Image (tube, rainbow, N blue to C red; front, side, top):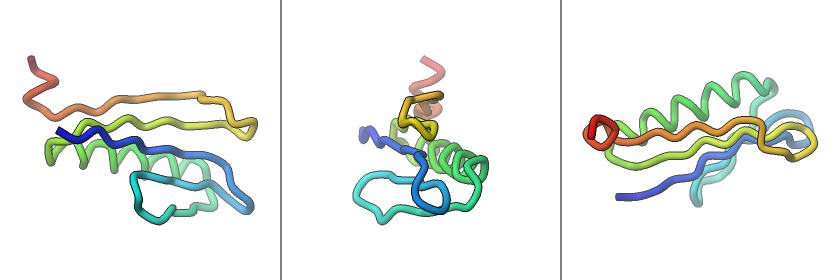
Length: 76
């Protein structure tokens, strides 16, 4: 099972969604970046990976963390 970390943090001109070794995705809105991160976390859990979504504020502090687990593991 793979554990994937998904991070949302501010960047110049918007908000950046980063996961694994993939290139970052940049959004103009923090809300859209966060929504995209949660959709990605849910999708990763659907295919059998554990995913942790961390959202950072403009000061770099973690202001939210959600863990997504595969359905079979979450039911156990």
